[in-house]
Image (cartoon, rainbow, N blue to C red; front, side, top):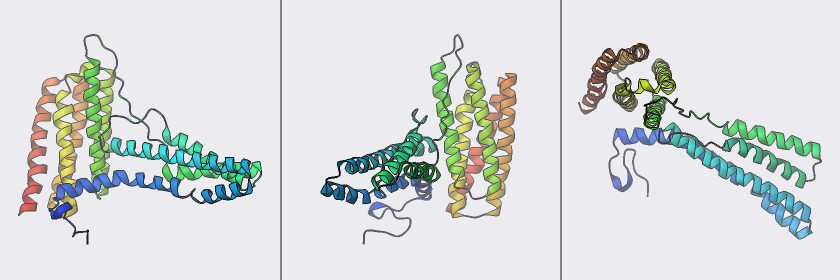
Amino acid sequence: MSGGPPGLGAGGHVTSGDQLSELAQRGRAWAPVMKTAALFVLPLPLLAAVLGALVAGDVARVSLVLGALGSTWTAGILSWRALVAEAHYLLGERADLPAVPQKLISAVLTSAGAGLAASAAGHAVPAAGMFAALGAGGYLAFYGRDLPSRRVVVAAVEGIDTAAVGEELEEAHGRLRRITAAARGIHVREFCDRLNRIIAIGQTILAEIERDPRQASRARRFLHLYLDSTERVTGEFARTHRQVRSAELEQSFRQLLIDMEDSFVQQHQKLLQHDTTALDVEIEVLSARLRREALNEPVRRRSS
């Protein structure tokens, strides 16, 4: 048998909780990619229609069926590329999404494929139009629309390296997306709601820096130290919570989330007030607490 018991990786190596959590997180992000198989499998019966039309010498019908196959399979390729890009984006491994709306184009191609297939089956134009509309609607219902791309556009300010600021903001947005991905593995609604508010405040801070890149130097510790600590804390709790359900651990994380949310609000206010000293001190203190309480304590719990 090629399989192994849960917790064992290839070659019989024990898979750690962190690795299992990362695999689960990546699995959730990549699962929609598998749905593109439908666009390749469902049109396969049209191959028989092509053969029948060739035998009958019906060139027009052959053209219609081949057009339907080509449209649908091209839609499948574009959908696969769109969903792969979305998976990387949601996992924070990609800075932005494709500029071309690949799902929208795929919906149009699926619609065309359905209409051509209906025409090849002998349906009149109105009926073929209805099939085309159903194809487009079915595609959007099954695959959804293209994710809106959050593109960083830093305002030009004399004396500021906007390219460097843009890179920092892209990295920060990636951390927020990884926090979002980790939050999906936490099945406590209260915690998810608080994390969503924290993420929203973080996005507001990043948008403020985009508008005024001079703020980047004041927020550098927030962009790197604080967001990194928040990302690691959320990921660690998500991993621990799946293995150990502890009321004490949940209460500790609940208080951390309250403090993080309050701190995010304060950082935004102080950033707008240009209160650099207080900003750095509070970030350093809370980040140290995050590392101490939310990272080390769960590890000790698992090892005890």
